[in-house]
Image 1 (cartoon, rainbow, N blue to C red):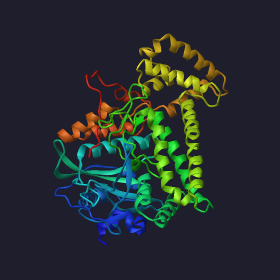
Image 2 (image 1 turned 120 degrees about the vertical axis):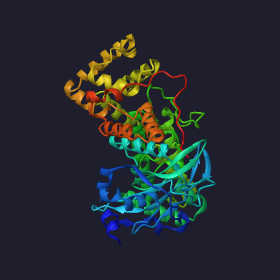
Image 3 (image 1 turned 180 degrees about the vertical axis):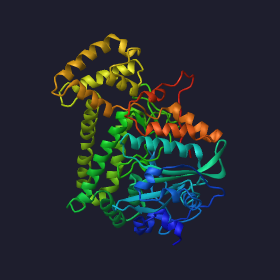
Image 4 (image 1 turned 30 degrees about the horizontal axis):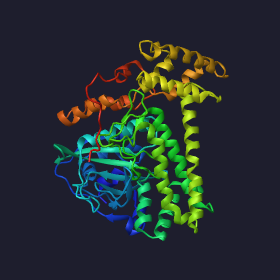
Length: 489
């Protein structure tokens, strides 16, 4: 082991490579010509037990480029399947390679994956490469989600490759280093259920339990417990998306993790004006993955997970189906409970009253009617501002506001305590779409990363509510065309 490798702090294990060979293909990255570090996440590196200074050296960049394999790593591409917009396909890591699993000093395990390091057996005709813009977008949004307290994969580094990527136009190439609790997906289980054996399915489920749900690993009905735990985590995750106005954009089953993390920031965006029908993705022409549909799609995806687990739930098919249906039936109640609790907090409510849901929905209906900005409306309610907004000048809002104040007055906590709660639950800033585009344009077109650096600094403290954040709270100017996002393949 060289001094540089030792100093970097890599401490790899490769538990995934010890699973049945059907689940992966050993695959090294394809080297690139001129790798240069564009962004590096110092705080994340340190939390992983890595030497941030060493990783920004020539030797460290070579690892992020796939030009050098660090000691202890065992690169592989994972196989999985998935329902894409409702259609089942064989998929797999077409442009991603798992280097291995970094073990921290506390014993925690994190996947270290390169995104865009070249072709794999699952590339399906693609070049296995990634463009700079989409990789920087994932860096921005995933770090913003982390700062908001939402479970997510994270971005350790983005580098340029010195190569040109050919899509509809010529684009600068890049590689993202992604960190995750794991890359196990609903689609991983679908793949084994479709093309593997029951024993391979059992091995995968046991591995998942050991890695993510050790507290239920010893349960007699541990596979039912696995299903129930994943349902609970997804109900909590989707609730958190809804509470901040996040729209994933491509909730295919291969993009739903078993760990409960948000993954794959392709056509994602945050909602401005509140509207449950909001869609940003250029390929989601029917609105399948619209903001308001996300809880329903989550249930649909979880049903596919339950189907894959059926052989493990019970020997009798009919009984297995009944067990799965009973578990899935809990999602709606879990989501509703999480959502109501979150919305109560956004309105400064500490306790529960029967009419709270009506109070919340009446506000959302008014916001939709007046095209009120989702984030700024709750921010204005927090600080008692917003008189200039159309919504706040309406008669129905005035009537609603009286009911809200009366509701606040019926709880033991003070108005000041309610304001403090609202400040902790209503972000001042989100990754506004026009601000993200502004940062990406400066970086990709001009090589200027200062705009992105400033944006990331603001997004790192979304609940700070400081005056110098004001420019990041403003809405985009009028446009003849609706905002659209793209998958970045």
